[in-house]
Length: 170
Image 1 (cartoon, rainbow, N blue to C red):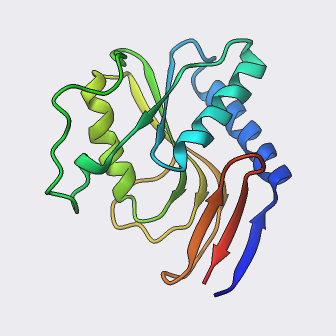
Image 2 (cartoon, rainbow, N blue to C red; image 1 turned 45 degrees about the horizontal axis):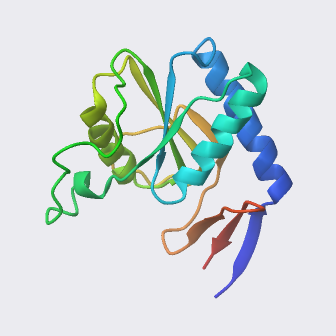
């Protein structure tokens, strides 16, 4: 199995900072933002984006983790929770969904359903670190860190933690 580094930790950091500026610009500030990281890898990235927004706006928006498993169309055996896991009302707010990679669009579609359990937002925007193409649903990110054309058999791996980096594995 081969592994190629596509984005260094420094490049990931610069990209997340740029995404934070794009989010601020598109929303005329950060006052109306609610940020949801799509579990698993989207959660730490959402926090990093919120931290970057906080560095610019002097106050970081809250972040929440979003489990989309019960809302996926390929997981009919899992029921949505009776009550949402977080006490937040997104009605009238601008929701930012953060994920590491967008591929087929199925996870993003499930995230749209999952976030609606928290109310009726003014807008929902998708922010991804890597867009690798190959959509099965007509979903496009609002902010993209990097577009990367891949083959179906390849996998894009985003390592988060102390030093985030992006790899392609075959």
